[in-house]
Image 1 (cartoon, protein in one colour):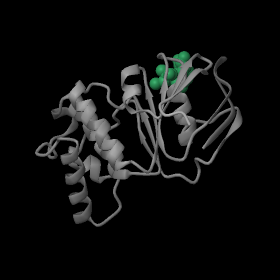
Image 2 (cartoon, helix red, strand yellow):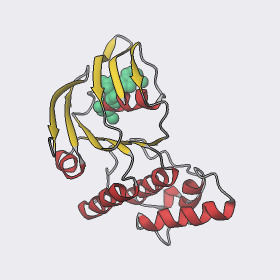
Image 3 (cartoon, helix red, strand yellow):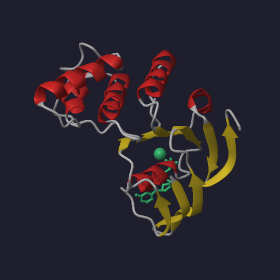
Image 4 (cartoon, rainbow, N blue to C red):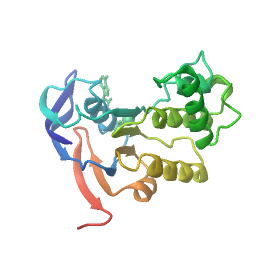
Length: 206
Ligand SMILES: Nc1ncnc2c1ncn2[C@@H]1O[C@H](COP(=O)(O)OP(=O)(O)O)[C@@H](O)[C@H]1O
Ligand SMILES: [Mg+2]
């Protein structure tokens, strides 16, 4: 996927100014940068949820995108189980089995019947993580995916995504450098707004 000269201004505030970057078709890319630099805006543009003023994004249109938003965005009026099943398109029985499976994989077996308001913050984040894996895709956009999780749980979730979404491109936004180092094949150090690439760190440079 290729982002070329992307520009976007919100009411006079330029968040993207001819921003360009090219991503591989698989692997883990971390976008590391301070709050407010434009990371979420960039993900929203890639997802097609936000318009931009100029430039182009090539290659994202043919990818199935699973977007884990910065906020959990769970449906408050249904159970954790139904939140996961809601993104599935099989038979009711199959969706229920799949939802059960993903909830168990994020360590929430037994909590599926609870509504979001009955779960802790970390558990709600894990429901959102389970839903994103259940939906699946060739491109995962993950905005501060492990916020609110303790270190052990975060490590388990990192291992789970690396395994279950191994063939996908994972673009992960974080302001935790240790997290970026644990996961990434490539880390882009960003600053802004407007967002710019200050450095690029490759784990296994060719
Ligand atoms: N819908 C919006 N309207 C106006 N300004 C916005 C909007 N969304 C984001 N911004 C501004 O754009 C900048 C980048 O925001 P964002 O992409 O959310 O940054 P990050 O995710 O890196 O914290 C911030 O200064 C923010 O205030
Ligand atoms: Mg953000």
